[in-house]
Figure 1 (spheres, rainbow, N blue to C red):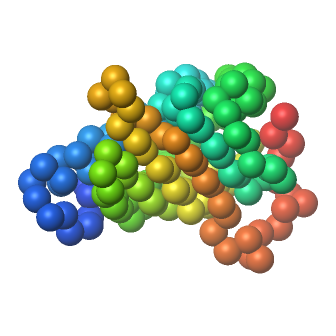
Figure 2 (cartoon, rainbow, N blue to C red):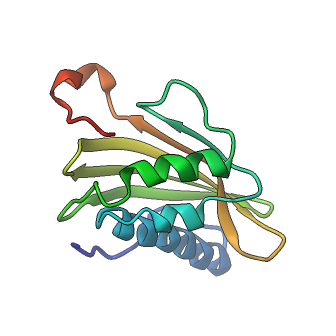
Amino acid sequence: MEQQKVTAIWQYNSEEEYRLAEYIIGLEKAALNKWFKGDTSGYEQLWSKHSFSYFDAVVTKRVDNHATIAEFLKTIEGKLFADSYDFSNPRVQFGQDMAVLTYQLFAKTTLIDMEYNCIEVFQKETDGEWHVIHSTWSFIRPMDKKFGTEKEIV
């Protein structure tokens, strides 16, 4: 997997915010590194088991819990691979015990060519660990996509 230096490009109010932004970006990149090797466990572990929702460009309804997304992840386990990916323009914005990571993701995979705007809402849970409580993956400029040429996902 092609490794890129993780750098938070946004301006932060303190060194602590900067370090936390780097940590959150690192959590996401660790999940992506597994994802593009066919291993969905990175996201299965990153996404909150207590409070989770998910929107995806190819899903018509919101997923409202971890159990449902875990079942979906099983359907693509070992099927999605990419030699490299581009994790662009990460930005982390903070609230109290919450953070929103936004970035763009580009990858040519064994299933689809990914060009996504990604939103991950993190919350510091009662165990002190940061988990994603909401995830949205939406196509960048969907009007430019030729959906008929995509490979079947499941």
